[in-house]
Image 1 (tube, rainbow, N blue to C red):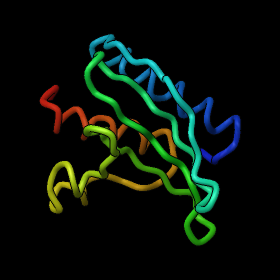
Image 2 (image 1 turned 120 degrees about the vertical axis):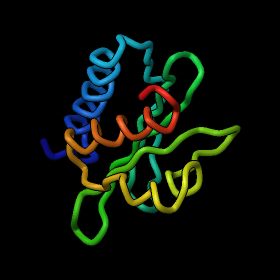
Image 3 (image 1 turned 90 degrees about the vertical axis):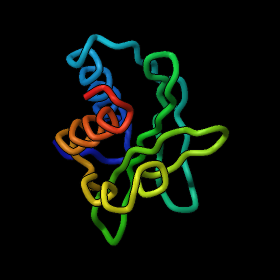
Length: 116
């Protein structure tokens, strides 16, 4: 399902993330913050996963197309896959703003974190 940076899209993103972690080990996940970058028109949902990993998932527009992506919190900053993994593995992540892509990206993040 297509996600946009509106209330329905944000709720669908939260539901997708929560359901993913419930289905994959019934792991603890809590959304703790919404934020947005008004200049670029992106919004983010921030999550605590397994009480030790912080991630944020963003949805925005690029050239009239809805795009999204996951970032890993390290210290006080968030980093995309090219920074926290490798440039080769970065290309495995998708940037479509769909619930299917969110699940795919979370599975790749699990692989990086050693859950798979």
